Length: 372
Image 1 (cartoon, rainbow, N blue to C red):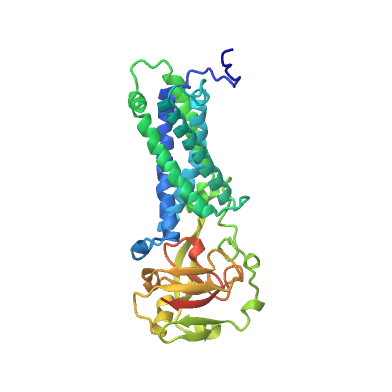
Image 2 (image 1 turned 90 degrees about the vertical axis):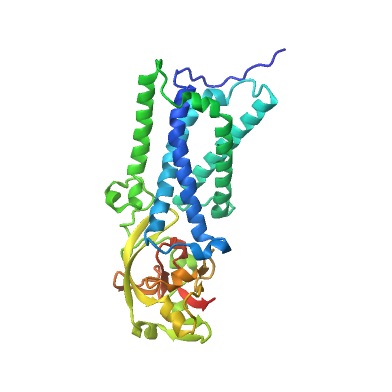
């Protein structure tokens, strides 16, 4: 008996063709490249290799706010585009027989890897911006690793399909489906625009009034700034900060109380906090420049620091800050937020605020600053 072809849904529309796939693929490829590059920036800022530590930029102060907002926006747009792309190529995904030769098998496997890695990356990224983690693995490390799988499999796919892409890149003279294709692309473009418009306001203040689908509205906040990790989650209470004094370790180590910190010259700066989930917000911060605390401990300019938090457990309980951030006059041990004493959820009695750094590195409930 001959092999029976499995029964699958049939899509008989004329737009399941290479021309439509290439047209949508151009948009999807652009979104994936932007998402990959901005994600790489985010990872390097959070986990810089040793040779790059001194190269991380302090300016512009809104740099991470821009790149991470673009990362999340391009990722959300890619979800719509992936669905449109899969609809277009669906008949070929389930062609029968599964492969006709060894080269064809390699091609099919590369497509399967690309689709699986891309869907996994976008789905877990979407769940991450909702701050829901139903998996046992580390999101940050897994997301970073799979990003390279997506990039590599995409390059392989483009190399394999280069002749087909080249043939269908430009508009052909005789294209009987041109009107239908324009209508489809207009619909896909409108869907991407709608998703972007209703979510990007969480990082772009000018569009904040339209962020109906954004997981976070930065205007709904305590002391004018949203909170990701609460004091309760970090197991920090006012009682645990009673008798608090900051320990500053260096050539001339010392301890300093909150009252003594408040008596030192204060600096007031306006800086954003930008989180990996894509939301960001500006605020006024007041406190003592980190470089002043280090100088008092005898540490020279160009000294990196290690910061420890009162929190009992957390991936970022200990944070290291390269010298260029510690030397910057806008990097503060902040005591006030929008001219009010920090609330416990915002890091009372003291927290770090620095320009152009991810929010997870703006350590709250600081207990120790060590000159490295």
